[in-house]
Length: 275
Image 1 (spheres, rainbow, N blue to C red):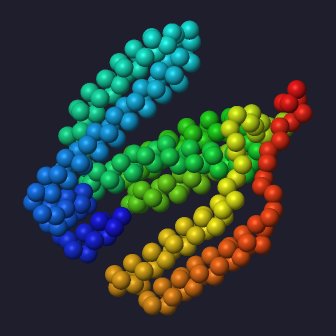
Image 2: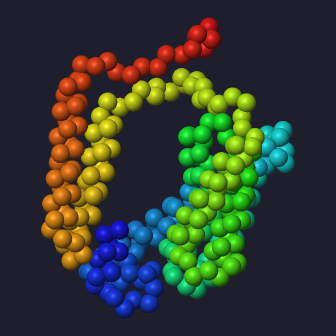
């Protein structure tokens, strides 16, 4: 984020946002370090690409091939199928890569738009599942399909003059309405309950509240400070943000000290699990 903000202030006439980081590196670093940085960046890209291939191959072999195509597949057969699928994905990626240079708003924005096809439906399903335990699995399946179709239609097929983030917000609202309607028409007979197998110690960290709120207000403080430094804020904004952060941190420290002798949270299995 910081290199992008710096490049935004230094280079106002760049044709694409993708040129911000390379231009900044080329102008700031000494010539010998530019080549070294290029090698490091290339290694990071290759590592990310390998991780993507491994994840895609595992998802296909275990989630699709073993569950739908061949349920009796042997482990060695799954490995072979995963390798072939990974090779296929790699070839497709190489063929598609040159077209990415023609993305109107750059690679980063283009990838965010593609991620929005499945990100928002998944996030909607998770949020609704947390807060509405009577919503059935049918609602999640329908919302997944409608969310993908509505996003592609609004963002790509129909030419609306909307930023894709607004389209994501609209897709989220559509998914919420769809899941609520299905949950109202055909709710679960019993609310969904999570059965803990106690395979992993899930005891909460005692300082989780302090760390979470401290990080939150540190982010607010960084935003206020950078806004003031860049000339887009006021001194009052920074002062108020720092004051709120200080008050909250002091309160959390005092609350932690007051409850320092409280017993830690423990999980006890049900009677039927202990038999």
